[in-house]
Image 1 (cartoon, rainbow, N blue to C red):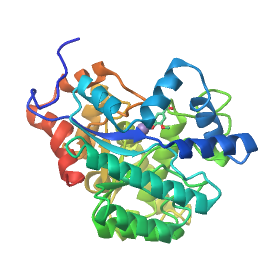
Image 2 (cartoon, rainbow, N blue to C red):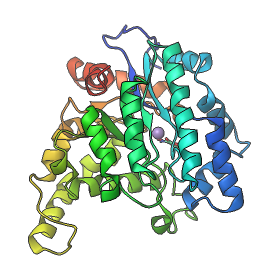
Image 3 (spheres, protein in one colour):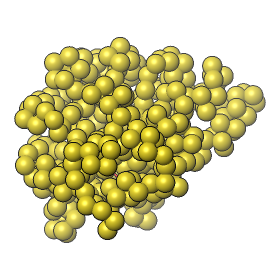
Length: 351
Ligand code: 1DF
Ligand code: MN
């Protein structure tokens, strides 16, 4: 342990954590019902079949912490020096739910619950609007309600919706509403859809350990290569976990994407207005959730720019005081650290 963790800016910056999860009981109960009656996809069966039923210490602590939007969470933030949390409904939200009316009801109540918590702790909590992409027009309304009535600062989508991706035409009302509201779209992981998850489950690699990253990087790359940012040049998309490794892969994906464009190999791969480096530095934001690892954070800053990398803890899935210290101790300039921990969040979420 190198230093005590306190809120209040004793190190020259506030700590704003940008990928922090909560859950509602009825959300979890629907997952459990779907697992039991066999209508849940493999991803939800594996993930929530575990967390919502396991008697392991990890699962029980996570369930208790997810449900708390009050003093327990504040105490945990105080204990790790987290000044402010940007909260969102935990993954996969209502996206795997087959009864769309039920999904929308659960989601509306979850967004209202989050709004109440933000009003109880106005200096500690901010919210993101969760949506039900199964109904894109309704979700566009909910995005507007979140921005205009609930005071939310961004929009949360947990990667694919039943195997479909945001670059597909049926989701355009969602992208348009986010762009019109001038808000950030956070694409959080979930495990891959049944068509992709393949043998990841029997290897124990479908979840946050690997499947999350593969699925979410694929989603981001689809949006990049499908020309979403030519359609919406001001749209800002944020992703966690070191921007799901896109900065590491960028030279190769860009090179091979251009090779695909030149050789006209796929109908889906058409010329874009810019190369992928451009979109990574103009439309994509990355957080350090799950990656309190100096080489990875420096790579993100190098590739995306120091204005585009933000701190996240990923509470309650990763609640580790020493990971906060790792951020405090990063070998980057004081100015870069303040951007990382505080001012980039203030800028992009318009706090
Ligand atoms: C896990 C990790 C679950 C993250 C999450 O949501 C999550 C996990 C259900 O460890 O199973 O958000 N995460 O972002 O790393
Ligand atoms: Mn997370």
